Structure formats: structure tokens, C-alpha cells
Image (cartoon, rainbow over all chains, first blue to last red; front, top):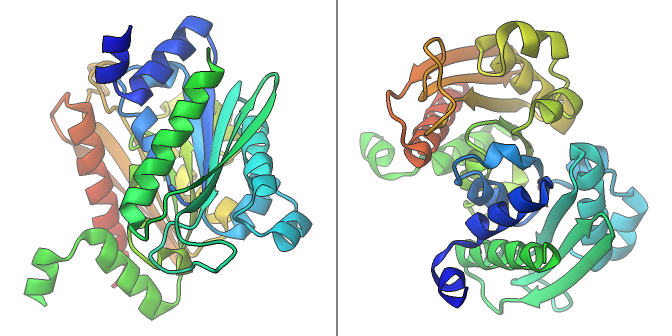
Length: 163
Length: 163
């Protein structure tokens, strides 16, 4: 088992668990910009459990496609635990999937503030039994690396929830 | 100019044109699974013109999020020019963007038929002045390579339309 963990990509392990459980997954991505969906769909046969995703880069897409309340975006900002939760729950509804993972953060290299620096990321996993948020700070202004780290963290959190 | 073409990634050239034109873009991806959105959002500052995307892997997502008619999916199949057009136009509406690019195809390695072999891909670009479809056959069962070729073809078609 530890060997399998070490060498098998996260997206393959997620897919194997979803197939065993006969459950489906979807994504709601802001700063990762589609990378998580891309990774999940690199796996042959993933169409059996990966139904789709929403890349919600603009706030208007978060509102209109995922149903994130405009007032929440104003009060807490797009990069917040509240919005991550609303995105994941919105994706679970809109895509009609069992599990949805969301990511919202500041990928950089620009766009950071003292309160919300580049590298700050909120992730949420919406499941049939509740929604579970997490916060990370990659302490880096490398846009591409922040996307990869965030995608891997999101897939890891989903894998934990799949048991 | 030919030097710039040779060395600058497509997603950067697309972004530069969109910034000059002050226009926005979105994506509707089936077989590319989020790769086009991922490429577009690798560019720093892309949030100025890239509003978002829909990864419509399952037919239910094509119908519910992009508004592709169920009857069209039954009559022509998900991998068809008609569905590519409907996905691009649906994304343009749902994401409220000026330009939307869609891809639907058979990435493989399985899932091919004599009429719709692995590597067959339909792409469409929806613009303010009309929607333009294209058909490709990569003649390959390499899933990952088919995704990359399709994403590059879609970005090239968009770039042509951006003039």
C-alpha cells in the first residue's frame, strides 16, 4: 500500500476510489484555472466518474454558474473560506455529482494584499455528508507552481474524504 | 512578427489580442477536460479577459450547464459538429463572454467506433459575428497527446478569429 501511494498519481488513486464506491466527482476552480479537471481527465476511463467542472475565474461566473451569493463575494472577498465552501456546494448542485472540490486563491505573481498574499488558497470538498474547507499558504509568487500545489492539495483532501 | 509567432505560446498570443481588443473569452471543454482553460490561466494577468469555462464531460453537464439540447445529443451524438457549435454558443451565453471555444471528441485510448474513431475531434469558436466549426482527426490513440493537439488547434482557431 505504501508503495502504491508513493508511485501512483493522486488523480489515479482518486479515480480508483470513486470507481469502487460508484460515486461521481466535479470541480469548481478559480485560481487553478482548470488544472484539477485536466488532471482528473488524464486518466483513461475517467468519464465513468468525472462528470465535469466549472472554471469560475470571474466573480460573475461564480455567481451565475455556481450560485455564489454576490453579497458573500463583497463581504468576504472571492478568496475566502466562505466562497470556497459555496463554490464546492454550488458545483455539487450544478453538476449533479456526489463529490465536488473547489479552489480559490491568489496564484500571482500579482494581485496580493497584506491580508491576502500571493500563495494564499482556500479549498473545499463538498460531500454527501458535509463540506470540508481547508486553508493553505504556499508562500510563493510562482503562478504555475501555486496552481500545481493547490491542485495536488485539493486531490489529497478529496482522497481523504473518499476513505 | 514571424519570430514572435515561432517562440510565443498560443495562449500568450491569444491573451495579447484579447487585451488589445478589450474582449473576453471562455471555454466549453469535453475531451480536453479543462486543458484549454488551464493553458489560458497560466498567463499572468489572464483574469482581465479569461472569465471562465465549463468542463462538460458528462452529457448531463452539456445539457444542464451549457444548454445543449438532449435531442441533439441523441440524434448526432456528443462528438459532432452540431454539439460543438451548441457548446460554444452555450458557453458564450452562460459565461457572458465575447468569444467561446468548445471541443468535443474521442480522446481515447478506448471509446472509438468506425464512424467516430479515437482521435476525432470537433471544435467550434463562437464569436460576436457568428460561430465557426472545424473537424480534426489526430489518427492517434494517445489520450494525453490528443488533448494537447486539440487544445492547440482550438487556441489557433480562436487566434485566427481575433484577427
